[in-house]
Image (tube, rainbow, N blue to C red):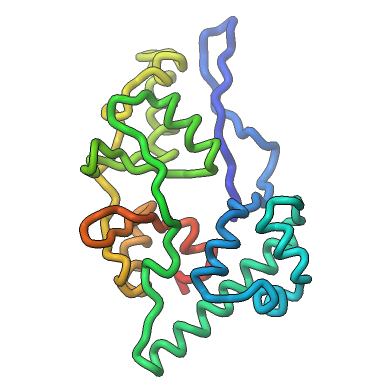
Length: 229
């Protein structure tokens, strides 16, 4: 996965806002390492089995899951490649046996969200802290919208370029002014191949169980695991 967070630097003399990358080049970024343990559990793999598939030591897997080591990108890539391979293999087996991977097998459990009356600055802080590129907008138990980093970037550029708002005013703008339609909601037992059609058009899908939202599957996670093929 490659992520570039865009920041906005204000020229104090000119009163202008310029968009600049917080990194000087495309730098491979590690995914949330908590997801390694989550994915291993969802795929019913032991640490030893995952280590064997990835060509790394079991102790490395254990240390990553405990958060006691900062692994290299190459080792994390080996682990993700192992996940890709086992998922592809199970997809093939599913066609033969009539069983399929489902949205619930791969979704991240629990959903970080924002509310319409929060400001854009709060959403940006939450996105950067969790390395998210999208957040559902929720009121109570109702999904009322979706917010993406693209929407925030485009709105910030348009408002500051036309001098309608300063950067500080943009960050104080309520989320309800720029949020998009809600992300699609699929039951956790939806086959992953059906989810792929939604994720070709949407940033994320929300995962439900008996009407309650229990997780999220993003297009970035989906593509990172090679499931678009």
